[in-house]
Length: 130
Picture 1 (cartoon, rainbow, N blue to C red):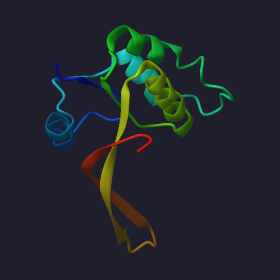
Picture 2: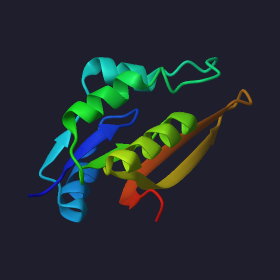
Picture 3: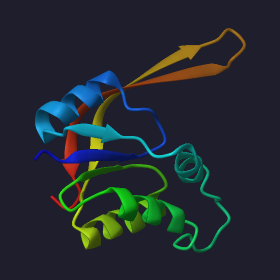
Picture 4: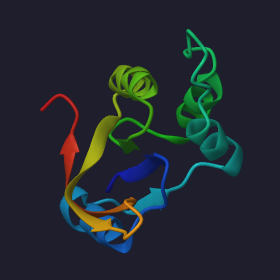
């Protein structure tokens, strides 16, 4: 049976990422976190000196839903990613991240201001630790 892909990142999955997940990872389902988990993941307080306990609801959600061999897309706060990737390995999930090609365009205004526009395009999913 094909694995599922659980999402743990600050954005909605793009159609290109979804298509690649189904093609390259062979996932049967893409599972978005409940709103309260997504909200917690997107708003990790920058002043907390320790976030392991803060992430307990995320670990509980995954432990109650994911199974050994399921993929976990982890991107976001560096420390939170480290903790959740470690958790994924402990639970025998397969942690991955999306690689992107990035383009930046600078537009210089007549008033001396600079507007910088970034464009990101998904390339592949890469396994953590590989």
